Length: 164
Ligand code: FES
Image (tube, rainbow, N blue to C red; front, side, top):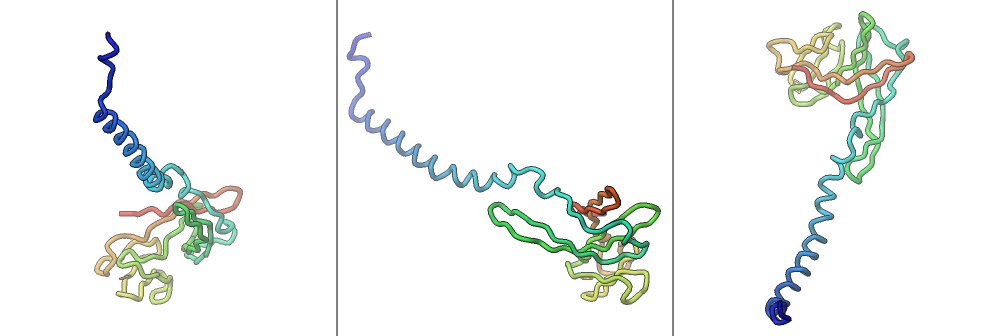
């Protein structure tokens, strides 16, 4: 090959240079956005942390309200979140129900209307003592349940799961 074959015209040189600089600038703009979008997904398991709520000794077969708090990291925003759960023990099984009505999200109370039912004052929704929606009332599915882990006599709650 002769030296002449390797020559790059001014136009080609300018095109390559502009493409290189443009590509570098585009990568500089896109990479932070991609990192921002993917960061929470890369922190696997963050939302499945278990939180200590109470001792098993405190539980009865009637649902009782327990409040608990934990630190939540949402991308770069950190906050302390407070939640509630109705917790009871029957046949050595601990169950923790979310107090959020499955109709439109109001907070239910236990035993205020019927001594063995959860009642939602917003649209008169009712759930039996296991959190199963009473037919003919607005909620179309049972109260959600927390993941429960009992260890050394202590009750830990995890994520909320939907029942059908
Ligand atoms: S929000 Fe509970 S019945 Fe509608």
